[in-house]
Image (cartoon, rainbow, N blue to C red; front, top):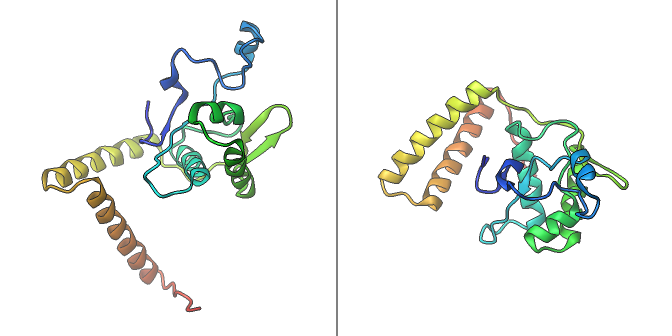
Length: 175
């Protein structure tokens, strides 16, 4: 199942060895080490640094409930192999997740989720998704391309935040 175009669950990787298996440890090791529930994807045209794309994908998966406390993130070597990126990039992303308090490294074992983010209950999430898909279909029918949809959504979200902030009496500081 795909969360969005950037994040998918391990179920999409049928036939691949679970993350963390060395390949020569045999079937017993594969049974002990489950695959990570997330597989990273990169969008080279996004303009977002690679390490931040990885961080954002983990955060999205946490918000949507695809990652839970104790889940293991993919091993650095597995991410490097699947995305053809520098190991330091993955390490930087995992350090950022640790700094945010979302993940923790365990020497010799990997990196594990140690905190969650606010989640919406599944029935509400399903209805929101259905509503959003309807909005996207309408936007597409009016001729908006993906960039136009993102721009419109971002503008509406910004306006929503400003109205919500004004309603709650928040004042922005001027530096």
